[in-house]
Length: 80
Image (cartoon, rainbow, N blue to C red; front, top):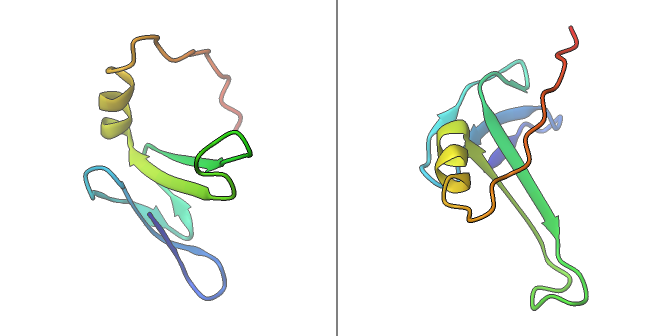
């Protein structure tokens, strides 16, 4: 769950699963976390709804470790 200041700067992020507050400094999330967003479409029972949530890295790992088919992982070069 994200909260924004009046100027739309990121103020806080909480993991929707465990409730942990993730570190945010100067409007930037400063620790591992993932943002998920889905706009449901015509073939869904949720047609017309947008869902979004945040997970801390630990909860993300816990979730994907339960998948029957593993997530696709590819190495990414970090650009500075």
